[in-house]
Amino acid sequence: MTAGKGGHHGPPPDNFALSEVPIAELQAQMTSGRQTARRLVDLYTRRIADLDQRGPRLNHVLEVNPDARTIADQLDTERRAGRVRGPLHGIPILIKDNIATADRMETTAGSLALLGARPPRDSFLAQKLREAGAVILGKTNLSEWANFRSSRSTSGWSGRGGQCHNAYAYDRQPSGSSSGSGVAAASSSCAAAIGTETSGSIISPANASGVVGVKPTVGLISRSGIIPISHTQDTAGPMARTVADAAALLTALAGTDPADEATAEADAHKSDYTRALDVDGLRGARIGILRGTNVDPKIQPLYDAAIALLRQRGAELVDPLTFAPQLNNGGDLLQWEFKTDLERYFAEWAPTSPIKTLDDLIAFNRREAAREMPYFQQETVEASARRGPLTSPAYLQLKERLLRAARTDGIDAIMQSQRLDAIVTVTGGPARPIDLVSGDSGGGTGVPGITGVAATAGYPHITVPMGYVHGLPVGLSFGGRAWSEATLLRLAFAYEQASRARRAPGFAACPAL
Image 1 (tube, one colour):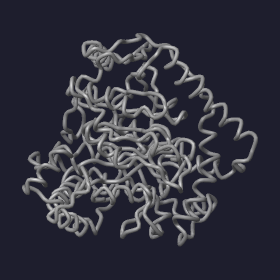
Image 2 (cartoon, one colour):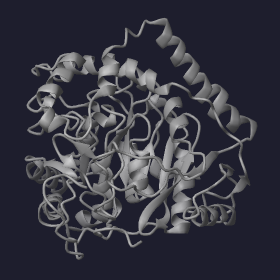
Image 3 (cartoon, rainbow, N blue to C red):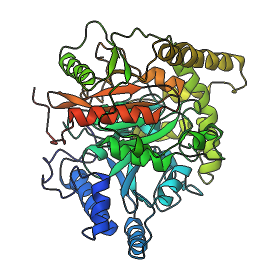
Image 4 (cartoon, rainbow, N blue to C red):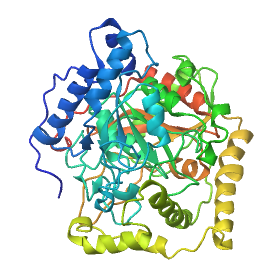
Protein backbone atom coordinates (compact mmCIF):
# COMPACT_ATOMS: atom_id res chain seq x y z
CA MET A 1 0.00 0.00 0.00
CA THR A 2 1.29 3.43 -0.90
CA ALA A 3 0.07 6.98 -0.61
CA GLY A 4 1.17 10.24 -2.11
CA LYS A 5 0.42 12.53 -5.01
CA GLY A 6 -0.30 10.02 -7.76
CA GLY A 7 0.50 6.54 -8.95
CA HIS A 8 3.60 4.99 -10.43
CA HIS A 9 4.00 6.05 -14.05
CA GLY A 10 7.22 4.26 -14.93
CA PRO A 11 10.85 5.32 -15.01
CA PRO A 12 11.99 8.78 -16.14
CA PRO A 13 14.12 9.25 -19.23
CA ASP A 14 17.54 7.65 -18.70
CA ASN A 15 19.44 10.27 -20.69
CA PHE A 16 19.46 13.03 -18.08
CA ALA A 17 22.49 15.19 -18.83
CA LEU A 18 23.50 15.63 -15.17
CA SER A 19 22.97 12.07 -13.99
CA GLU A 20 25.75 11.11 -11.57
CA VAL A 21 27.80 14.22 -12.43
CA PRO A 22 29.94 15.20 -9.41
CA ILE A 23 30.31 18.72 -8.05
CA ALA A 24 33.89 19.16 -9.30
CA GLU A 25 32.79 18.35 -12.87
CA LEU A 26 29.85 20.78 -12.63
CA GLN A 27 32.27 23.43 -11.45
CA ALA A 28 34.67 22.64 -14.29
CA GLN A 29 31.85 22.95 -16.83
CA MET A 30 30.90 26.38 -15.47
CA THR A 31 34.54 27.47 -15.42
CA SER A 32 34.95 26.52 -19.07
CA GLY A 33 31.72 28.25 -20.06
CA ARG A 34 30.05 25.02 -21.17
CA GLN A 35 27.55 25.36 -18.35
CA THR A 36 25.99 28.08 -16.20
CA ALA A 37 24.37 28.07 -12.78
CA ARG A 38 21.12 29.15 -14.43
CA ARG A 39 21.26 26.19 -16.80
CA LEU A 40 21.99 23.81 -13.90
CA VAL A 41 18.96 25.12 -12.01
CA ASP A 42 16.76 24.64 -15.06
CA LEU A 43 18.03 21.10 -15.68
CA TYR A 44 17.61 20.00 -12.06
CA THR A 45 14.18 21.66 -11.84
CA ARG A 46 13.08 19.71 -14.89
CA ARG A 47 14.53 16.54 -13.39
CA ILE A 48 12.50 17.05 -10.20
CA ALA A 49 9.33 17.50 -12.24
CA ASP A 50 10.13 14.37 -14.25
CA LEU A 51 10.53 12.35 -11.07
CA ASP A 52 7.69 13.80 -9.00
CA GLN A 53 5.04 14.82 -11.52
CA ARG A 54 5.55 13.08 -14.85
CA GLY A 55 7.49 9.92 -14.04
CA PRO A 56 7.69 7.59 -11.09
CA ARG A 57 6.05 10.06 -8.68
CA LEU A 58 8.69 9.80 -5.98
CA ASN A 59 7.28 12.71 -3.92
CA HIS A 60 10.79 13.58 -2.84
CA VAL A 61 10.81 17.38 -3.27
CA LEU A 62 8.15 19.49 -1.56
CA GLU A 63 8.89 22.71 -3.42
CA VAL A 64 11.42 24.28 -5.75
CA ASN A 65 12.77 27.65 -4.70
CA PRO A 66 10.93 30.26 -6.81
CA ASP A 67 14.01 32.49 -6.54
CA ALA A 68 16.52 29.83 -7.64
CA ARG A 69 16.87 31.13 -11.20
CA THR A 70 17.39 34.71 -10.01
CA ILE A 71 20.03 33.58 -7.51
CA ALA A 72 21.75 31.55 -10.22
CA ASP A 73 21.76 34.54 -12.56
CA GLN A 74 23.44 36.65 -9.87
CA LEU A 75 26.09 33.98 -9.32
CA ASP A 76 26.70 33.73 -13.06
CA THR A 77 27.20 37.50 -13.14
CA GLU A 78 29.74 37.20 -10.33
CA ARG A 79 31.59 34.48 -12.23
CA ARG A 80 31.77 36.58 -15.38
CA ALA A 81 33.19 39.41 -13.27
CA GLY A 82 35.96 37.11 -12.02
CA ARG A 83 34.55 36.38 -8.59
CA VAL A 84 34.14 32.70 -7.72
CA ARG A 85 33.32 32.10 -4.06
CA GLY A 86 34.61 28.54 -3.96
CA PRO A 87 33.82 24.96 -4.96
CA LEU A 88 30.07 25.41 -4.43
CA HIS A 89 29.70 28.58 -6.52
CA GLY A 90 26.57 28.12 -8.62
CA ILE A 91 25.98 24.56 -7.40
CA PRO A 92 22.27 23.67 -6.78
CA ILE A 93 21.68 22.03 -3.39
CA LEU A 94 18.42 20.67 -1.98
CA ILE A 95 17.80 20.97 1.76
CA LYS A 96 15.47 19.19 4.14
CA ASP A 97 12.21 20.92 5.03
CA ASN A 98 13.18 21.47 8.64
CA ILE A 99 15.94 23.96 7.80
CA ALA A 100 14.76 27.56 7.98
CA THR A 101 15.10 29.88 5.01
CA ALA A 102 13.96 33.50 4.99
CA ASP A 103 12.61 33.45 1.46
CA ARG A 104 9.43 32.48 -0.34
CA MET A 105 9.74 28.81 0.65
CA GLU A 106 8.08 27.15 3.62
CA THR A 107 9.83 25.57 6.60
CA THR A 108 7.43 23.01 8.08
CA ALA A 109 9.14 19.73 9.08
CA GLY A 110 6.52 18.22 6.76
CA SER A 111 3.66 19.30 9.00
CA LEU A 112 0.63 21.27 7.88
CA ALA A 113 0.75 23.03 11.25
CA LEU A 114 3.64 25.29 10.19
CA LEU A 115 2.46 26.22 6.71
CA GLY A 116 2.66 29.99 6.35
CA ALA A 117 4.86 30.46 9.42
CA ARG A 118 7.82 32.00 7.57
CA PRO A 119 11.09 32.26 9.54
CA PRO A 120 12.30 35.82 10.23
CA ARG A 121 15.82 35.04 8.96
CA ASP A 122 17.90 32.29 7.41
CA SER A 123 19.17 29.42 9.51
CA PHE A 124 22.93 29.60 10.01
CA LEU A 125 23.27 26.60 7.68
CA ALA A 126 21.33 28.31 4.89
CA GLN A 127 23.43 31.42 5.43
CA LYS A 128 26.63 29.37 5.08
CA LEU A 129 25.35 27.81 1.85
CA ARG A 130 24.53 31.20 0.38
CA GLU A 131 27.90 32.62 1.42
CA ALA A 132 29.61 29.69 -0.32
CA GLY A 133 27.74 30.50 -3.52
CA ALA A 134 25.43 27.49 -3.49
CA VAL A 135 21.94 27.81 -4.94
CA ILE A 136 19.35 26.54 -2.46
CA LEU A 137 17.22 24.74 -5.04
CA GLY A 138 14.31 23.67 -2.84
CA LYS A 139 13.05 21.73 0.16
CA THR A 140 12.87 17.94 0.38
CA ASN A 141 10.16 15.73 1.81
CA LEU A 142 10.86 13.95 5.09
CA SER A 143 9.40 11.81 7.82
CA GLU A 144 7.17 14.37 9.52
CA TRP A 145 8.71 16.11 12.55
CA ALA A 146 11.91 14.24 11.69
CA ASN A 147 10.13 10.99 12.62
CA PHE A 148 9.46 12.09 16.18
CA ARG A 149 5.67 11.83 16.18
CA SER A 150 4.86 8.15 16.52
CA SER A 151 6.57 4.82 17.08
CA ARG A 152 4.21 3.40 14.42
CA SER A 153 5.10 5.88 11.68
CA THR A 154 6.04 5.03 8.11
CA SER A 155 9.37 6.52 7.11
CA GLY A 156 9.16 9.16 4.41
CA TRP A 157 5.53 10.11 5.05
CA SER A 158 4.51 13.66 5.92
CA GLY A 159 1.19 15.42 6.06
CA ARG A 160 2.50 18.06 3.71
CA GLY A 161 4.14 15.80 1.13
CA GLY A 162 2.58 12.36 1.36
CA GLN A 163 4.70 9.24 0.98
CA CYS A 164 8.21 9.60 -0.41
CA HIS A 165 9.34 6.56 -2.42
CA ASN A 166 12.66 4.82 -2.86
CA ALA A 167 14.27 5.51 -6.24
CA TYR A 168 15.57 1.94 -6.51
CA ALA A 169 12.15 0.35 -6.01
CA TYR A 170 8.90 2.27 -5.82
CA ASP A 171 7.26 -0.07 -3.31
CA ARG A 172 10.16 0.34 -0.87
CA GLN A 173 10.48 3.09 1.69
CA PRO A 174 13.36 5.57 1.54
CA SER A 175 13.92 5.30 5.31
CA GLY A 176 14.10 8.54 7.24
CA SER A 177 13.82 11.04 8.44
CA SER A 178 15.94 12.69 5.70
CA SER A 179 14.00 10.68 3.14
CA GLY A 180 13.70 13.16 0.30
CA SER A 181 17.29 14.32 0.68
CA GLY A 182 18.55 10.77 0.24
CA VAL A 183 16.30 10.14 -2.75
CA ALA A 184 17.28 13.48 -4.30
CA ALA A 185 20.99 12.77 -4.06
CA ALA A 186 20.51 9.24 -5.41
CA SER A 187 18.33 10.41 -8.30
CA SER A 188 20.56 13.32 -9.43
CA SER A 189 17.80 15.79 -8.64
CA CYS A 190 20.51 18.12 -7.33
CA ALA A 191 24.27 18.22 -7.06
CA ALA A 192 23.96 17.13 -3.41
CA ALA A 193 21.54 17.46 -0.52
CA ILE A 194 21.42 18.30 3.18
CA GLY A 195 19.79 16.08 5.77
CA THR A 196 19.52 16.25 9.53
CA GLU A 197 19.96 13.56 12.15
CA THR A 198 19.13 12.93 15.76
CA SER A 199 19.52 9.15 15.68
CA GLY A 200 19.98 7.65 12.23
CA SER A 201 18.11 10.22 10.15
CA ILE A 202 21.03 10.88 7.79
CA ILE A 203 22.70 7.49 7.96
CA SER A 204 19.65 5.28 7.49
CA PRO A 205 18.18 7.04 4.43
CA ALA A 206 21.67 7.30 2.92
CA ASN A 207 21.93 3.53 3.32
CA ALA A 208 18.48 3.00 1.75
CA SER A 209 19.21 5.33 -1.17
CA GLY A 210 22.73 4.14 -1.93
CA VAL A 211 24.46 7.45 -1.23
CA VAL A 212 27.16 8.79 1.05
CA GLY A 213 25.80 10.18 4.32
CA VAL A 214 27.89 12.18 6.80
CA LYS A 215 26.59 12.58 10.34
CA PRO A 216 29.24 14.90 11.81
CA THR A 217 30.26 15.56 15.38
CA VAL A 218 27.46 17.44 17.13
CA GLY A 219 28.65 21.04 17.13
CA LEU A 220 30.57 21.02 13.85
CA ILE A 221 27.51 22.42 12.00
CA SER A 222 25.17 24.94 13.60
CA ARG A 223 21.59 23.94 14.44
CA SER A 224 20.31 27.54 14.66
CA GLY A 225 17.10 27.69 12.67
CA ILE A 226 16.73 23.93 12.25
CA ILE A 227 13.49 22.52 13.66
CA PRO A 228 14.82 20.48 16.59
CA ILE A 229 14.34 17.25 18.45
CA SER A 230 17.32 17.21 20.80
CA HIS A 231 20.09 19.75 21.38
CA THR A 232 22.22 16.88 22.71
CA GLN A 233 22.06 14.83 19.50
CA ASP A 234 20.81 17.01 16.61
CA THR A 235 23.05 17.84 13.66
CA ALA A 236 22.81 18.50 9.96
CA GLY A 237 25.03 16.85 7.39
CA PRO A 238 25.69 16.17 3.70
CA MET A 239 24.05 13.48 1.59
CA ALA A 240 25.80 13.02 -1.75
CA ARG A 241 26.66 10.53 -4.46
CA THR A 242 30.39 10.64 -3.70
CA VAL A 243 32.61 11.12 -0.67
CA ALA A 244 34.33 14.03 -2.45
CA ASP A 245 31.02 15.85 -2.87
CA ALA A 246 30.12 15.22 0.78
CA ALA A 247 33.53 16.55 1.86
CA ALA A 248 33.11 19.72 -0.20
CA LEU A 249 29.70 20.34 1.32
CA LEU A 250 30.88 19.63 4.87
CA THR A 251 33.72 22.10 4.41
CA ALA A 252 31.25 24.84 3.51
CA LEU A 253 28.85 24.07 6.36
CA ALA A 254 31.28 23.68 9.28
CA GLY A 255 31.92 26.58 11.61
CA THR A 256 31.22 28.33 14.89
CA ASP A 257 27.87 30.07 15.33
CA PRO A 258 27.51 32.34 18.40
CA ALA A 259 23.83 31.40 18.54
CA ASP A 260 24.60 27.69 18.98
CA GLU A 261 26.86 27.09 21.97
CA ALA A 262 27.53 23.51 20.86
CA THR A 263 29.58 24.93 17.95
CA ALA A 264 32.05 26.82 20.19
CA GLU A 265 34.90 24.51 19.14
CA ALA A 266 33.90 24.13 15.48
CA ASP A 267 36.29 26.71 14.07
CA ALA A 268 39.17 25.12 15.96
CA HIS A 269 38.38 21.67 14.59
CA LYS A 270 37.09 22.29 11.06
CA SER A 271 39.29 21.99 8.00
CA ASP A 272 39.11 21.72 4.23
CA TYR A 273 37.92 18.13 4.25
CA THR A 274 38.61 17.68 0.56
CA ARG A 275 42.33 17.76 1.38
CA ALA A 276 41.92 14.62 3.51
CA LEU A 277 40.82 12.53 0.54
CA ASP A 278 43.46 10.00 -0.46
CA VAL A 279 42.97 6.93 -2.64
CA ASP A 280 45.66 5.23 -0.54
CA GLY A 281 44.09 6.41 2.70
CA LEU A 282 43.43 2.94 4.11
CA ARG A 283 47.11 1.99 4.17
CA GLY A 284 48.32 1.73 7.76
CA ALA A 285 44.91 2.56 9.24
CA ARG A 286 43.84 0.48 12.25
CA ILE A 287 40.18 -0.45 11.97
CA GLY A 288 37.90 -2.38 14.30
CA ILE A 289 35.44 -4.74 12.58
CA LEU A 290 32.08 -5.36 14.21
CA ARG A 291 30.66 -8.79 13.47
CA GLY A 292 27.62 -10.63 14.69
CA THR A 293 25.82 -13.93 14.90
CA ASN A 294 22.93 -15.06 12.72
CA VAL A 295 23.96 -12.53 10.06
CA ASP A 296 21.55 -11.96 7.18
CA PRO A 297 22.89 -14.33 4.49
CA LYS A 298 22.06 -11.81 1.77
CA ILE A 299 24.34 -9.22 3.37
CA GLN A 300 27.19 -11.41 4.64
CA PRO A 301 28.95 -11.83 1.23
CA LEU A 302 28.92 -8.07 0.69
CA TYR A 303 30.38 -7.46 4.14
CA ASP A 304 33.00 -10.18 3.71
CA ALA A 305 34.07 -8.60 0.42
CA ALA A 306 34.25 -5.14 2.00
CA ILE A 307 36.39 -6.42 4.88
CA ALA A 308 38.69 -8.21 2.45
CA LEU A 309 39.03 -5.02 0.43
CA LEU A 310 39.94 -2.99 3.53
CA ARG A 311 42.69 -5.51 4.29
CA GLN A 312 43.84 -5.61 0.68
CA ARG A 313 44.15 -1.83 0.61
CA GLY A 314 46.54 -1.92 3.59
CA ALA A 315 44.36 -1.50 6.64
CA GLU A 316 45.26 -3.32 9.85
CA LEU A 317 42.09 -4.95 11.15
CA VAL A 318 41.02 -5.77 14.69
CA ASP A 319 38.61 -8.51 13.71
CA PRO A 320 36.34 -9.16 15.43
CA LEU A 321 35.92 -6.13 17.68
CA THR A 322 33.87 -6.64 20.84
CA PHE A 323 31.77 -3.54 21.45
CA ALA A 324 28.30 -3.42 23.04
CA PRO A 325 27.60 -0.24 25.04
CA GLN A 326 24.39 -0.16 27.10
CA LEU A 327 22.18 2.75 26.00
CA ASN A 328 18.85 2.09 27.69
CA ASN A 329 16.05 4.69 27.67
CA GLY A 330 17.70 7.00 25.15
CA GLY A 331 14.27 7.89 23.76
CA ASP A 332 13.30 9.38 27.11
CA LEU A 333 16.11 11.93 26.76
CA LEU A 334 14.82 12.95 23.34
CA GLN A 335 11.27 13.39 24.65
CA TRP A 336 12.47 15.73 27.38
CA GLU A 337 14.52 17.85 25.01
CA PHE A 338 11.93 17.85 22.20
CA LYS A 339 9.39 19.69 24.35
CA THR A 340 11.79 22.43 25.45
CA ASP A 341 13.71 22.76 22.19
CA LEU A 342 10.70 22.78 19.87
CA GLU A 343 8.79 25.33 21.93
CA ARG A 344 11.89 27.54 21.84
CA TYR A 345 11.95 27.16 18.05
CA PHE A 346 8.28 28.14 17.79
CA ALA A 347 8.96 31.34 19.74
CA GLU A 348 12.10 32.40 17.85
CA TRP A 349 11.69 31.01 14.34
CA ALA A 350 7.91 30.84 13.82
CA PRO A 351 6.68 33.90 15.74
CA THR A 352 3.64 34.41 13.50
CA SER A 353 2.43 30.84 13.88
CA PRO A 354 -0.54 30.09 16.16
CA ILE A 355 1.39 26.98 17.23
CA LYS A 356 3.29 28.03 20.37
CA THR A 357 3.46 24.84 22.43
CA LEU A 358 3.36 21.08 22.03
CA ASP A 359 -0.20 21.20 23.34
CA ASP A 360 -1.08 23.53 20.46
CA LEU A 361 0.49 21.09 18.00
CA ILE A 362 -1.36 18.15 19.52
CA ALA A 363 -4.65 20.04 19.27
CA PHE A 364 -3.96 20.99 15.64
CA ASN A 365 -3.26 17.38 14.69
CA ARG A 366 -6.48 16.26 16.33
CA ARG A 367 -8.48 18.89 14.45
CA GLU A 368 -6.76 17.93 11.20
CA ALA A 369 -6.68 14.19 11.90
CA ALA A 370 -8.01 13.26 8.46
CA ARG A 371 -4.99 14.92 6.82
CA GLU A 372 -2.36 14.62 9.55
CA MET A 373 -3.13 11.28 11.17
CA PRO A 374 -4.67 8.97 8.57
CA TYR A 375 -2.05 6.24 9.15
CA PHE A 376 -0.41 6.79 12.55
CA GLN A 377 -0.97 8.89 15.63
CA GLN A 378 1.15 11.25 17.74
CA GLU A 379 1.85 9.35 20.94
CA THR A 380 5.50 10.40 20.96
CA VAL A 381 4.57 14.09 20.87
CA GLU A 382 1.98 13.54 23.59
CA ALA A 383 4.52 11.77 25.80
CA SER A 384 6.98 14.60 25.28
CA ALA A 385 4.36 17.19 26.23
CA ARG A 386 4.06 15.52 29.63
CA ARG A 387 7.80 15.81 30.37
CA GLY A 388 9.06 18.26 32.95
CA PRO A 389 11.74 20.95 32.70
CA LEU A 390 15.37 20.28 31.82
CA THR A 391 16.32 21.09 35.41
CA SER A 392 14.69 17.82 36.49
CA PRO A 393 17.15 15.50 38.31
CA ALA A 394 15.74 12.53 36.38
CA TYR A 395 16.61 14.21 33.07
CA LEU A 396 20.05 15.34 34.19
CA GLN A 397 20.96 11.92 35.55
CA LEU A 398 19.73 10.16 32.40
CA LYS A 399 21.72 12.49 30.16
CA GLU A 400 24.89 12.03 32.19
CA ARG A 401 24.51 8.23 32.16
CA LEU A 402 23.88 8.03 28.42
CA LEU A 403 26.78 10.29 27.48
CA ARG A 404 29.15 8.38 29.75
CA ALA A 405 28.03 5.04 28.29
CA ALA A 406 28.33 6.22 24.67
CA ARG A 407 31.44 8.38 25.00
CA THR A 408 33.77 7.69 27.93
CA ASP A 409 32.88 4.04 28.48
CA GLY A 410 31.90 3.44 24.84
CA ILE A 411 33.55 4.82 21.71
CA ASP A 412 36.42 6.60 23.48
CA ALA A 413 37.32 3.57 25.60
CA ILE A 414 37.29 0.98 22.79
CA MET A 415 39.15 3.19 20.33
CA GLN A 416 41.81 4.08 22.88
CA SER A 417 42.31 0.55 24.17
CA GLN A 418 42.49 -0.92 20.65
CA ARG A 419 44.31 2.09 19.16
CA LEU A 420 41.70 2.41 16.42
CA ASP A 421 41.30 4.99 13.69
CA ALA A 422 37.72 3.88 13.00
CA ILE A 423 35.05 1.30 13.74
CA VAL A 424 33.51 -0.37 10.68
CA THR A 425 30.26 -2.27 10.34
CA VAL A 426 27.27 -2.80 8.06
CA THR A 427 25.12 0.33 8.05
CA GLY A 428 21.77 -1.41 7.73
CA GLY A 429 19.68 -3.78 5.71
CA PRO A 430 18.00 -3.14 2.35
CA ALA A 431 14.98 -0.84 2.27
CA ARG A 432 11.80 -2.36 3.66
CA PRO A 433 8.41 -2.30 1.93
CA ILE A 434 6.20 0.71 2.50
CA ASP A 435 3.51 -0.32 4.98
CA LEU A 436 1.05 2.40 5.93
CA VAL A 437 -1.08 -0.09 7.85
CA SER A 438 1.52 -1.30 10.36
CA GLY A 439 4.25 1.29 9.91
CA ASP A 440 7.97 0.60 9.90
CA SER A 441 8.75 -3.00 10.77
CA GLY A 442 11.85 -4.55 12.20
CA GLY A 443 14.45 -6.62 10.47
CA GLY A 444 18.11 -6.23 11.31
CA THR A 445 21.28 -7.38 9.60
CA GLY A 446 22.59 -9.55 12.39
CA VAL A 447 25.64 -7.28 12.58
CA PRO A 448 25.99 -4.84 15.51
CA GLY A 449 25.56 -1.28 14.27
CA ILE A 450 27.06 1.99 15.46
CA THR A 451 24.24 4.34 14.46
CA GLY A 452 22.69 4.56 17.91
CA VAL A 453 25.89 4.85 19.91
CA ALA A 454 27.39 7.45 17.54
CA ALA A 455 24.16 9.45 17.70
CA THR A 456 23.98 9.33 21.50
CA ALA A 457 27.65 10.25 21.82
CA GLY A 458 27.32 13.04 19.28
CA TYR A 459 30.27 11.53 17.39
CA PRO A 460 30.81 11.30 13.61
CA HIS A 461 29.50 8.49 11.44
CA ILE A 462 29.82 8.09 7.66
CA THR A 463 28.11 5.55 5.42
CA VAL A 464 29.28 4.65 1.91
CA PRO A 465 27.57 2.33 -0.61
CA MET A 466 28.81 -1.25 -0.14
CA GLY A 467 26.66 -3.23 -2.58
CA TYR A 468 23.15 -4.33 -3.45
CA VAL A 469 20.68 -6.99 -2.32
CA HIS A 470 18.15 -7.72 -5.07
CA GLY A 471 18.89 -4.27 -6.47
CA LEU A 472 18.47 -2.49 -3.13
CA PRO A 473 21.46 -0.60 -1.67
CA VAL A 474 23.35 -1.57 1.49
CA GLY A 475 26.01 0.66 3.04
CA LEU A 476 29.26 0.31 4.98
CA SER A 477 29.71 2.46 8.11
CA PHE A 478 32.79 4.22 9.44
CA GLY A 479 32.52 5.62 12.98
CA GLY A 480 35.00 7.37 15.22
CA ARG A 481 35.75 9.78 18.04
CA ALA A 482 34.70 13.42 18.25
CA TRP A 483 36.05 15.71 15.52
CA SER A 484 37.53 12.81 13.51
CA GLU A 485 35.69 13.71 10.29
CA ALA A 486 38.89 14.15 8.26
CA THR A 487 40.11 10.67 9.23
CA LEU A 488 36.76 9.02 8.51
CA LEU A 489 36.41 10.80 5.17
CA ARG A 490 39.91 9.68 4.21
CA LEU A 491 39.07 6.05 4.99
CA ALA A 492 35.62 6.20 3.40
CA PHE A 493 37.03 7.80 0.24
CA ALA A 494 39.76 5.17 -0.11
CA TYR A 495 37.16 2.40 0.30
CA GLU A 496 34.79 4.07 -2.16
CA GLN A 497 37.49 4.47 -4.79
CA ALA A 498 38.60 0.86 -4.39
CA SER A 499 35.11 -0.67 -4.35
CA ARG A 500 33.28 1.53 -6.87
CA ALA A 501 30.12 -0.04 -5.50
CA ARG A 502 27.56 2.68 -6.19
CA ARG A 503 25.08 2.27 -9.05
CA ALA A 504 22.48 4.81 -10.15
CA PRO A 505 18.86 3.91 -9.35
CA GLY A 506 16.65 2.33 -11.96
CA PHE A 507 13.28 3.53 -10.62
CA ALA A 508 11.90 0.00 -10.68
CA ALA A 509 8.29 -0.82 -9.87
CA CYS A 510 9.58 -3.45 -7.44
CA PRO A 511 12.88 -5.17 -6.71
CA ALA A 512 13.81 -8.17 -8.81
CA LEU A 513 13.10 -10.94 -6.31
